[in-house]
Length: 300
Length: 235
Image (cartoon, each protein chain N blue to C red):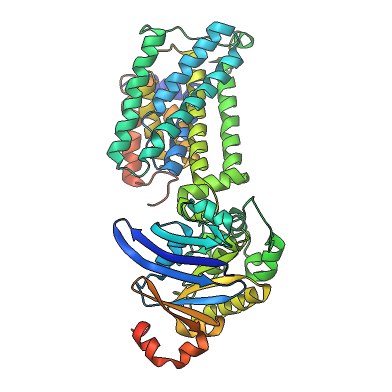
């Protein structure tokens, strides 16, 4: 353990600021993906193992649009929308047939989609790492210096955008009729159906929304990292950890847990560079012991 | 013509049959009690009408329109209003949000239960409108469950055991409410075990036993007919 380096960081304002900004960037990107996962679980009751594959697809789609049009905003948007369409086809064509099946069947279906998509992108785009689509021109400027801490403006933009989306998601779920229906469907879909609400449409919409968030996360990730088949696997594991820490089905919990994990990764990289994944799991174990239903989950 | 016409339905929970050639006729603007022992098939009858359990054969017509084969939500849109026995309010939604969830879009607006009319009919709920439904008492939840279903302007209200588990004083409140609804002209079918409660709110009754309807007539008649009561209702 690099205790000295860690303590040095904690005594330096610049290190704290830059690690916090880095942690927020990791955390907010993670939130985009994890919120979709937790939303789908909360309403559909399905643990969507294919969520990471949808994230990967978002990265490939945006890479393709970027290399065709050269327009950054368009590539991110179309990446997310393209994944929403794939998500809709997946939910309508396959997933809705296993809602009442056992967990194992659901996992098997999702996992087979992961394998198929992983191979499919290799057939279409090859098995090489594709280089990142890069950040938009207006962000290609010297980094900001805050108390000697280096902060890339694009990271701030990602944090800001994700924060806006988090607020938008919160408003959608708490202030709109759609959100009220979604939350009611998560609790008691049969009663909602008996009140004359078509819950099939609600389930499909929620899956599309979840896919959009996964796709958007992947598209944004393609701007700061390379794109490769299987890139969704590690984010899937992290999203699960976030979902478990925050409480299954809780979007607020996912937000809190994403920031915790982001910070743990960012500061953990200094304190225990070889054990950052381990820190994440340790936090999860700790939460499971102290609050088995997660930080903001229901006691079910 | 009857508003709700159920003819020879056979209904199943998974593979076990719960209703056998069950038939019912419910006329408009009436309050009718559906009586029977525990397990006789009262709740199953409601669940078959709403589409929650599978009906393999027979016919269910509302206002002459066949409902068989339609989904739960489309039956509700056609005018079936279901209030389940365990109320099933949405605990993390407020009273007002629960009522709004009961609204439907496709309305014929016969009764037009807008929010104002609901608050007029349920003044108690108006005072609790911003409270979470999960924090309400059993009686309040029962009121809310009825109000929520009314918000969808149903043609008929299927009330499953509204008095169950409520204190006598609260049951009286529910009785008053049903009287109020009768005056407005709401058609209600009430599944009950509480004969005393039914005597007060309904004028007609249907008795079901072992998944079949076995008797129908006026409540007064039934009150005099000790033999029928002993045969089908005594525990």
